[in-house]
Amino acid sequence: MLLSDDGLRHFYTKGYALASPGLGAPAARSLLRRVQSVEGRPGSDVFEADGQTLRARHGLHLDDTDLRDLARQADLLATVQKLLGADVYIYQFKVNTKAAFTGAPWPWHDDYSFWHLEDGMPGPYALTVAVFLDEVTDLNGPMMLVPGSHLEHEFGTLRADATGAWEENVSVDLRYQSSRSKVTDLASRYGVKSCVGTPGSVLFFDCRILHASAGNISPFARRIAFITYNRVDNVPGRFDRPEFLVARTHAALSPSVLPVMDSSSD
Image (tube, rainbow, N blue to C red; front, side):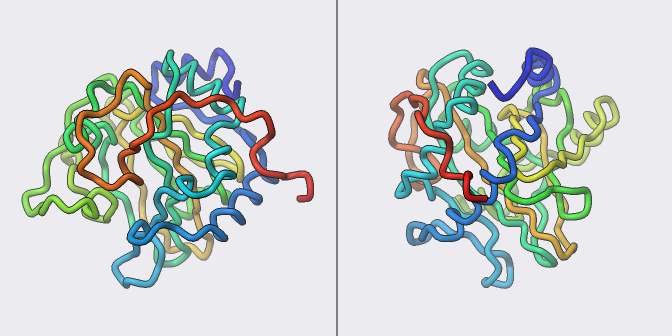
């Protein structure tokens, strides 16, 4: 697995764990090239406020075997199965680009609010794996987490002017956000962790943990691939949102025999 026993305990108690070097820098470079070369499904790419800068790409694994194999990489999948205690399937796959100079923030939120309230996911038996495609530093808008906040989960507050469009779930103005008072309370007791690491590092985080990221005004891109896994016995009850946000296939993943892509030439 990618986490030691101490790493597993850290995930359960703090809500996250970082594996570094994780998949390694060569695999990250290979993955980044693949992400850049794959054409997304119509309407699945999301842009910043300027309408030109890419903010996120969704569902690239749906039409690409190499990216599906990333989620099935043996060590990665074994770690996820251990953390969730069951077989899993891919709930979402996306790449957040956080472009140099222009990448906008992500406000404080938890993921389970969206998946339970929008999709009817029965329980919080899902987690997300973040694979760093670039070096993530304190300068280029790293993810910030409130350790332990998953143990005091409260559903996010519905934005007063929300329209119900799925795009609100991936925009700067998220449909469900955590209140400032709640974030302040939890952060004052548990602190805030900035998640940095080298390319190929792998961050595992609970679906209930509070997280956010600042904008990126540095000259360095911060691209991260996010793979969300859900237990096969925790399938949601609604499928109103697009397939790239709520998977329609729920078969248990089997490990990939080969390493993710070919990193030997790097």
